[in-house]
Image 1 (spheres, rainbow, N blue to C red):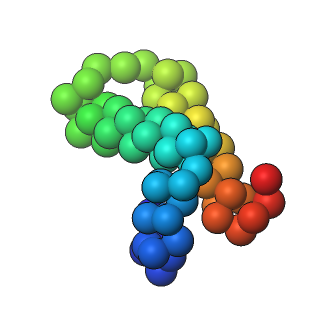
Image 2 (tube, helix red, strand yellow):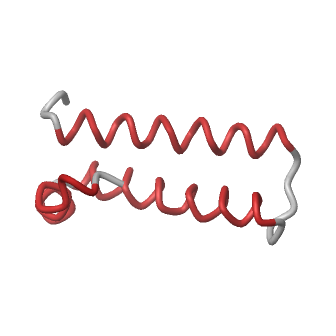
Length: 70
């Protein structure tokens, strides 16, 4: 995620509590989605879709914070 902006991400992780919280939540959701898609975590399609939407919303918010659009 944000491969071309790694230095900015590192700085935001050090300096911005909101960014840290959302980044952590995104990582958690990413792991859950991956586990569910691989069959390691049994969930229904509605839950999986909800996780994917939350993950995308988190990524969008992280992008906004990186772009300075608080």
